[in-house]
Image: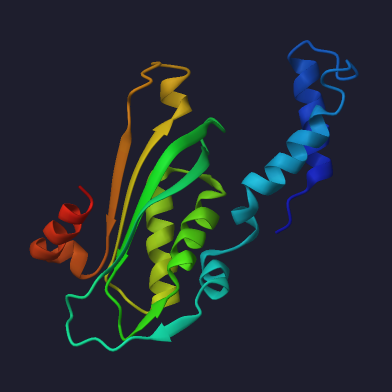
Length: 192
């Protein structure tokens, strides 16, 4: 699915009119085009399914492993997204992704790229974790995946209840991360 920038321009123009502003006013005359370009960038992930994202970032490398406890962890991946309920920015989001390799690993930058692409959709923080876990499983072949996300949501900090220091934390645990308390503890100790 391609993002229809012309339709976005038309709708933003309509929003400006609905807000009581003049869309031909000098300061906002080009706003519909700017917003359409911005939406194409910040919602890029909407162009792809989780499978397509996994295929984009699935180049892997063999890694000899003698232990089923070996773990790859990339933490503090900064992403942002937009809440699907209010189109409000979810910001200052930090994602930690962990997986136990099954004889192969993907490049570390691929993990960050996966997190970034998944976040570039109308999302819920909970689904971001689920989608990242699904893509990492497809890209690595490992069922043992964990995703931890901490973030602020402008729908809570800037409007409504207006609690600027409120953070939302979500965890997505798959495979042994879901059932092995020792593995969970090892992961959470690394995140401190």
